[in-house]
Image 1: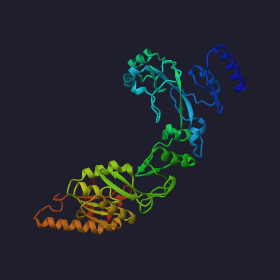
Image 2: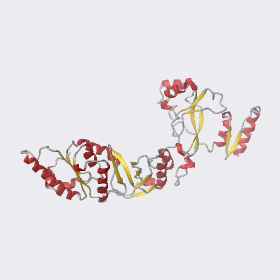
Image 3: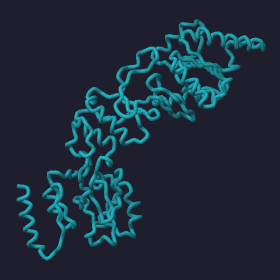
Image 4: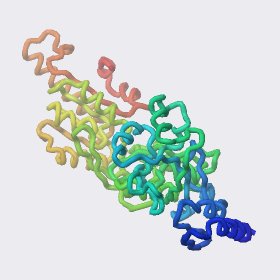
Length: 408
């Protein structure tokens, strides 16, 4: 039936334009006409295949929803985008004036040449406009007037076909299109070096492989994608994870506040979202202070405090893997090792021995200077870091004198 309708229309138009020569090519069920004058044929034949986009919604084909195995070709589609012809001599000024409403998509230039058979090809360029902004109140009145002066009907703009492929869609575009409409879109993740860390909700788990592959396809710095399987409830504060896509390699490096940290993400605790907190605490502690880092991890506090603040740091972690990378990171960042002592012991034992013994020794040294208030003076400021928010307060009872520590 589709071809019968097409042939009837073709005969009708052939009768009216029989003196014109044009090329028709039929390929894979798609009619291609080399002159936009005959686009009515193409639209008629392909209306069941073309994803005609509304003024506020440029999305992948609806057929990809529910996909469990990534089929990149399925994301190819033809969309209709509003455009306007502008004299070549005025392109620069027009582009600047309409910067906020240009059509922006990866791999698609908003400035394009007109078709071979367009009578304005030699004198004009085509500017593609964002379909979600043309008819909206976001356009300034001046912009609207300029567009109208160039012949754009804001209520019914001329549409131009643009072919989009998998490469043009963003991570969010693809994942949102694949997930069921009632599922929450996966828009956030943590990245540590080359590793992307997800914490997927139950309804997203059937699509976890696709999500992982899309992240690797779209973000060049990501080589490994993992999903968290359980809460952090073990002694060493790391968690079980599953590899969703990419390399089975968890040793990586990440940078934070002028320091470089190496770690094995599968064996130690690291949270990139704590970067601001790491900086806040580091900036708060004065230069040349004495710092006792009870749960140091791989050194997000200890390394910058020793390197940038020249603090004397007693740094400890129970996890032997964290202890290993803590020492590596001190050397990696060229920290003066005379300022640092590292320990691999339980936090309680660290407080009862290292902390207590050093603090008492320093107080005695201050007392030798005949300082009457040596116990309380800030002759050398001391700070105890207990970066274990859930249970840190429980460690205060392991040393009676710890009750006299001012918490801030």
